[in-house]
Image (cartoon, rainbow, N blue to C red):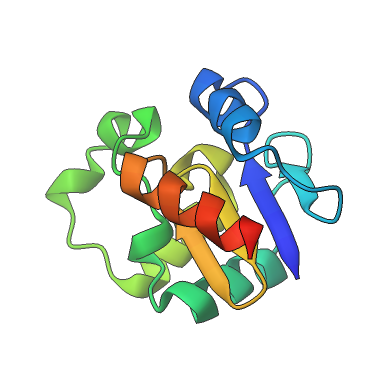
Length: 117
């Protein structure tokens, strides 16, 4: 499976999509237009090993809800990911058996290499 989860209103996601030059066989899912399903989140969790790894602590709602002050568990991270699209650390690329989460330079470089193989 090849899938790219992104937010169409996010300039960083747009820049990375252009940088990766996604092949035609990669399914692109705008998480605002098509919210994450339980299956989507479970697949990403299985590949990453943690809901927290998928979770963006930079999300506006994270700060507004004072979630930093709470002792969040894996189940909490899962519920929040399903609740609102902004909690997903973006973008997420799944390329067969590899997952690339976030927009760090190193992550994007590794994703580019993976897509070329």
